[in-house]
Length: 298
Ligand code: DO4
Ligand code: MG
Image 1 (cartoon, protein in one colour):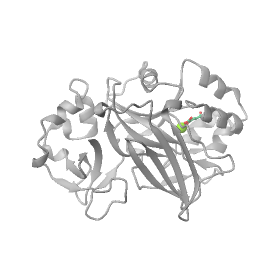
Image 2 (cartoon, helix red, strand yellow):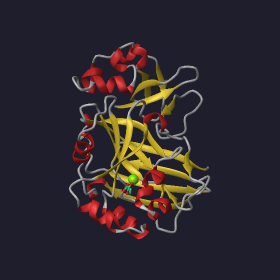
Image 3 (cartoon, protein in one colour):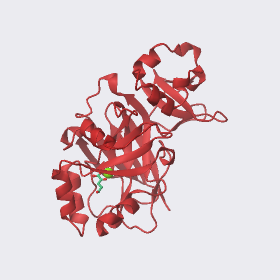
Image 4 (tube, protein in one colour):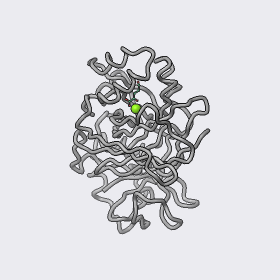
């Protein structure tokens, strides 16, 4: 069972439940706690999401066939939106040795990456407001002032206002490596721009029994239908625990609408690789789903 946000022609933004190939319209239940993702996250502080959903009679809700969750939406199936509405999206960095090594190679100021990998305090940075994240099948952008743009496939945590991990989704922390490498103070420009954050396709609830520290993550990049890069890792290789990252994010900060936290990349394409206009990026996280986004040069 997964949660999603979706829209159908003329129907606005809806909260949905994905079960057995059907998207059930939770917003149509009329229950305030199921109206939006923010409302659900707020309610989940006192009542677990699964308990809130238990009493919903799905047969009484509009349901839309969504046989192929990972595929392109058809005219008759709902269009999935990013699983974020009023939450901020944050990201952790240098949480895998592979990421540390790639930053050291690209950077003119090298030791910050080695130090943050080993430090007790993780690197955490603001990525975007939830409304600016893009969902499955929407385009991700390449900055016109950068020559070196890459996707970063990241397990993404969904946290409620009490900073409890209530779900997981896939995230793409699209980044400009040349801007990042030139000076660490340029990080916000290397990370925050139009269509630089993709999330989705849906939220797997934390209580579904998924072990976030043992999930395979695969990144595939297609160019003219051919695979130009494929890499794989496991969240078991992450140097930090998800709960530890959530704890640091919540220190002296409040997230009344909940928050999403990308947990860092463990896959970095070779240094001579940069995304191009027209590429297609697929991020597959076992048990969480496949996030697919075409690339657009801005
Ligand atoms: O400090 C650089 C950002 C690192 C990052 O985004 C990652 O490791 O995923
Ligand atoms: Mg990243």
